[in-house]
Length: 494
Image (tube, rainbow, N blue to C red; front, side):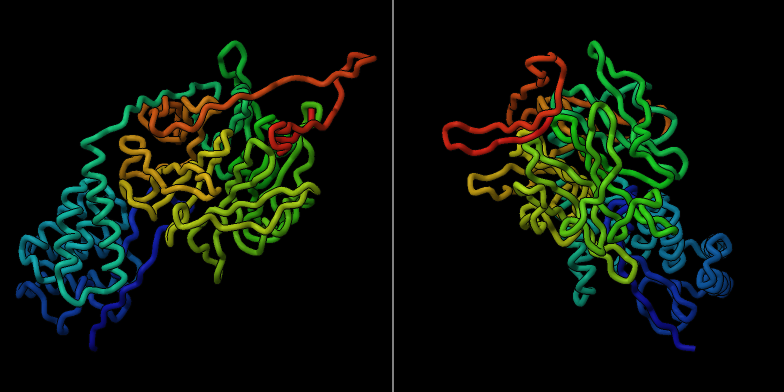
């Protein structure tokens, strides 16, 4: 039977953010070789018949998705001939799927050392595994070698050309680190469960975040008293039997936007929550200290696609969010959109932010600072440390967004970084990480933001409106105008 090579190109799903680099795996089908290049049938780098027999057995198990048995026979093949290039490359592939990137790199290096030109794709795979472990110099040289070969697959070439820039950036960034001293927020916020996607009010006194207990994602809130965060409590008015995520509380703490996804029952956490796509954006209002029943933002913000991770501007006018296009059940890369709230409380048709922000890859975790001039977001499409890095962009005089600026190392690493929140002062930033001193899983940390990554200074006014006769607090709408040009700067209610 003739053998054929089948190459499938895919990326890790955006919800699984531990992986970093666009990876080309060589998927072995029932009638394909277990090697990483097209060769004539039954011609291998070894003549050891037992090694070949074990290798052929491993192919059968691999085609049946029996990785344990495939691994067993690959190791037997390598015991018979440690210079069996195809077996080293195939075993590296299994190790990659197990996320054992250092071990995979070792086997790829061995395969390359035996014959560097036997399979050019081995250089590509070594470069990718090296990016996943932060070995930028090895990755750089491996990509460079791979790109030196003629007639390489155009998709692989495109990825290699992008990633070699990341490898070069990574080498340079490590030589010029930013100050970075993350501090765990403590057990008032963090727990043995995962905590992530923080949001904070303009006065810096109300802190909302997502906590995941088992499969359940819910919102929790903590308030600062005498400079200390109090024990977080669940927001029961919003939390449901489904999952709520990515909260964005308005500057005045009166409105919260969040994302909720459709469940198997066809609703978004509770029977009365209806929607339009796989994930929709909802909002709730805080009235007299209680959160109202969540309302779907509706079209044109929500569509039949995937809308999530909202960020509401401090002037109450603009909603930034992520939209991913759903096609045949799969979510394509996410992009950052914005929609403007008009005088009648209706959102305009969302506009996709320009090429300084969005790329042909993934953008996510958008955050507009209260200065309304500084945008933070994560992307794996701009040049960076590999995978998702955190970037900032400044609004230009014409209203457009300037070039994306990487926040540098070690804020960004070869791991995925996202969910950055910058407090109103612009000096402190928050993020989620599973570091050694965590209480368990992902915890929320704070760190002092480097000067070159800070937004503009802002001022906020906080107060209450009282009835002149009864002296009791009342609900009142108010607007703030710039008297020099009669432009409305902000609007809210007490």
